[in-house]
Image (cartoon, one colour):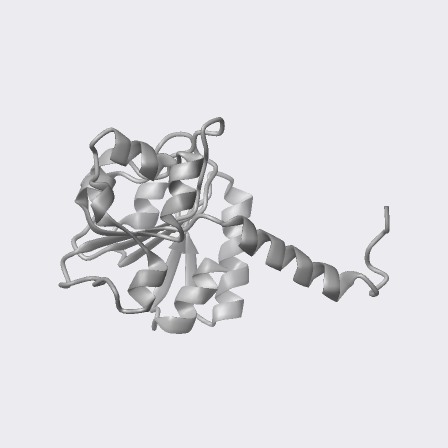
Length: 185
């Protein structure tokens, strides 16, 4: 869905995808090529998938960074979806990526604090300044600047909020409850 969202607002020339599972990445590349009507190539490793690109979207369950901040080009945008908490530690991006990101946005600072996610730990440990983390709603409303020049690295840490999960669940229930496709328990 993140790739579809980016394709809806940006003119993409090509897309490179990586998954450690070769069958998954090949299937995804084929499916997205057809859906988006553009070339989507499967890469054999994360480095190949991120080399020379303008936008990186990560959706992993990795406990260790999959993105190397040394390899990031100026002006890149990163969306990181993996979120852990106090008991499920996840971290898609390394410390250098966080340090290099001049603009960092989240869905909710309160959720980041409550869950003690990787961004919270980075702020707590002095890797990033908590004042440099902004809620995406503030950007959308024009209350905080987005990218101020073409060279800035931006990061959006997309974490769910309980309200979003409830809303999606309710909508799915409404659509499916009388369809015959579900089994009542």
